[in-house]
Image (cartoon, rainbow, N blue to C red; front, side, top):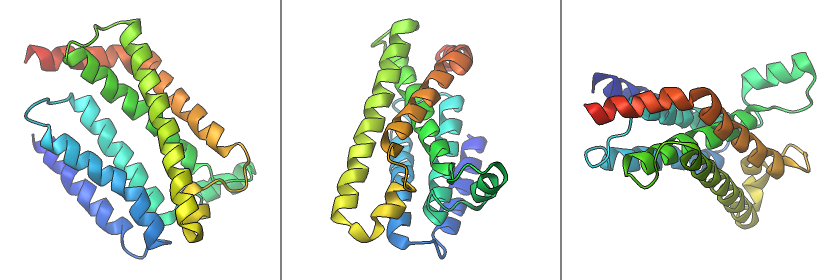
Length: 201
């Protein structure tokens, strides 16, 4: 439990920092709200369904990605501006880190939920279902971004973060797919062991 309190303290510290003179307060609010909602959801469900340490750590790291993106906007994170200049990529690619996490995290959470609730057994089908969920989640998020952009024209560019790239939406979903597949292919066995450990306890 101590590690969870440590993550909660860091969570609120970074959230507070991100809200101090962000690039745009409206964009900041739009970007950090999902992280705050995640804290509420997983905090309220902790006693009914405690997820693995791996899940909570990944969710925590994903929230930090959101908060940094909210503070600078995804197109202006300084480290990735520096990377852009070195490799002459032409764009700040921090948003792709965010969308990679948007695939990795939902796959982990969905897979664990399906297995722990005995909805599906461990194996390829639970992994396929989890990746499908992550892709659906990514597509819904892109639709939400589009609707928000339509209703808030003044922050549309910063919130969408397309940086003039016509295929940005498709690329975002592709990076979510890469994140989901990375979770399954590289971390699936470790996740299984984490599930076994918490089930046995």
